[in-house]
Amino acid sequence: MAQIIVENLRKRFIVAKRRKGMLGALAGVVHREHRVVEALAGVGFTVEAGELVGYIGPNGAGKSTTVKVLSGILVPDEGRCEVQGRVPWLERIEHVAHIGVVFGQRTQLWWDLPVVESFDLLRDIYRVEQKDHARRLEQLVAALDIGGILDTPVRQLSLGQRMRCDVVAALLHGPRLLFLDEPTIGLDAPAKLAVREFIRELNREHGTTVILTTHDMDDIEALCSRVVVIDRGRIFCDGSLDALRARVGVERRLTLELESDASLEIEGARIVEREGPRVVLAFDPERISPAALIARITEQHPVRDLLVENPPIEEIVARLYDDAREETS
Amino acid sequence: MRAYLAIFGARFRALLQYRAAAMAGLVTQVFWGFVRVMIFTAFYASTDAPQPMTLAEVITYIWLTQALLRLLPWQPDTDVEQLIPDGNVAYELMRPLDVYGLWFARAVALRSAPMLLRCLPMLLPAYLWFGMGLPASPAAAVVFLVSVLGAIVLSAAITTLLSVSMLVTISGRGIHVLSISVINLMSGAIVPLSLLPDWSQPVLTLLPFRGLLDTPFRIYLGHLPLDAAAGAIAHQFLWALGLMLLGRMLLQRALRHVVVQGG
Image 1: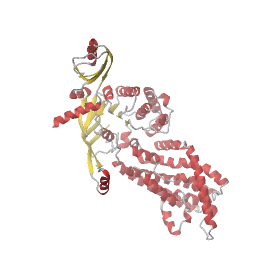
Image 2: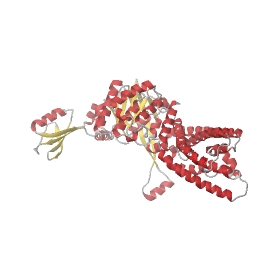
Image 3: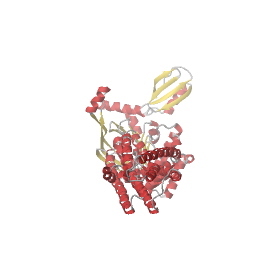
Image 4: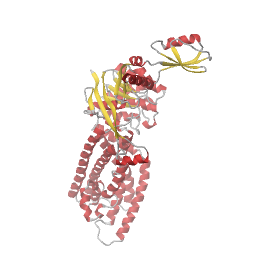
C-alpha cells in the first residue's frame, strides 16, 4: 500500500517587495508591491511502504515546503495529499501521532530538562504504554549509544549528541514513517556515520519508510535507493541514484598526491587541476571503476596519497538544471 | 489529559529551578511594597474624608499584591514567545495534541510556579513585621484560596490569548507594553480598585482584570460576603472560559495561515 500519495500539490506565498533606499522605504509605507512565489507548482509522487527516498534540490526549491505539507503543519493551496490514508492538515492530530519528524536545525527536546525527562514527556504526549516505551527506549538508546547522556540537560549536549537524542525522540512512539530534514547537518564524521548507520538499520530491519532531505550527497549515496529531485516547485527527476547519475553524467573526482612532478596521462580520466605533485582527475565511474583506475595509476606512478570524492549535490543538481534549460530552450 | 498534565508538570518543575531569580525578585518586591505602604500612609494621613478601606486593609492588600504579583499575565508565554520567531513552533504542531490545550497547560505552570516560589517567603515577613493582617475569617481564607485558583486560570487564559496574538504579530513586545499598563491598573496592582472613582466601578467590575487580584483580596479582607464572593468567583471562571474559547478559535484560524519559514 502506498504510504504517501501526492498529486499536483501547489502552494503560493505572497511576499512583500521592499524597494531600495530611504525613498523606497517611504514609498513602501504608502503602497506595497507584492510578489507571488510559487513554492510548489504541481508536485506529485508516490512512496510505498518500506522505501527510503532521498528528496533533494537546491535551497528554495520547495523541499521543506513539501515536508511541511506532508507533516501537516502547512496547508497547500491545491492538490491531493494522503499520508497513510489521512489528509495531514485535516486530521492533524491523528496524522502526527503516526509519523516521526526530525528537523536537523531544530530540536524537539526540552531545553532545560535532562534527556530522559524529555523522553518521558513524549511518552505521555503520545500516550505510549509504559512497557512499550521502556522496551523501545532501551533498543533506541543502545542503537544510538546515548546511554551515557540520558541524565544530561539538553542544553549541555554537543550537536552530535543532541541529534542522536532527537532521532530517538522522533521514534519513541514507533512511527512507520519518518521524515528527516537534514539530519546530518553540522555533524562531525563519526556522528554522521552513526546516524546514517542507524537510519539504514531502521529501514532494513523494521521496514520504516524514510523520507530524507539533505544537501549531503554522501547521505544519499549511503542510504537512498530512490531520489526525487525538486526544482522551482516542480519534480524534476524521480528514480534510482544510478539513473540520476547516468542522466547527468556526473564524473567523480580523484585527488592524487604523487611522489614526483612527472607528467601523467591516464586512460579513462581527464586532468581537471594540476599543482605540482597534486593532481585532480575526473572520471566516469560507469566506464571505469575507481578501483581499476587507482590500480592503473599506481602501476605507473608512485602515489603518496589519494582521495575519491563525489561532486557535491549542488553540482549534480546544477548540472540537472542546465540540462533542463537546454531542453526547454 | 495525562499529556496536558505532563506538559504542565515539566514546565512547573523547570520554572522552580529559578531560585536565584525568585530571591532577587523577592527583594525588589519587598522594596516596592514598602514604597507603596509609605505612599498610602501619607495619603491617609492627609485626609479626613471617610475612605472605602481602612489603612490597615490597604496595607494588607499591598502585601498580598506583592506576594501574588507574578501571577499577572503581563506578557505572552515566554516559551511560546521564543518558539514563534525561530520557527520551533513547527514542533508544537507536530504533537498529537490540541495546540491550545498545550499552550494553556504551559501558561498555567508559568503563572503559578514563579508566584508560589515567591509568595510564602513574601507573606511570612509581611505577617510578622510589615503589618499585614490575617484573613477576615477561616471561611474567607478557604474561599480566598479558591479565588486565587480562579485568578490563575483567568491569568493563564489571558496569557494564552496574548501568545496566540503573536502568531499574527511575531514579536511580543508591543502587546507586552500594552498589557502591562492595562493589567496593572485594572487588576488593582497599582491602587486597590475600591479606592478608584465611583464612576469607574461598573467598568472595573465588568472587565475580567479585577478577577486577577482584586477579587481574591476583597474576599480575604471580608469585603465580599460569601454569597457575593460566589458571584465574583463565577465572574472569574466565566471570563476565563470565554477567553479560552476566544483564544482557541483565534488559534485555529491563525494556524490555517501559519507559515513556518526556513529549513
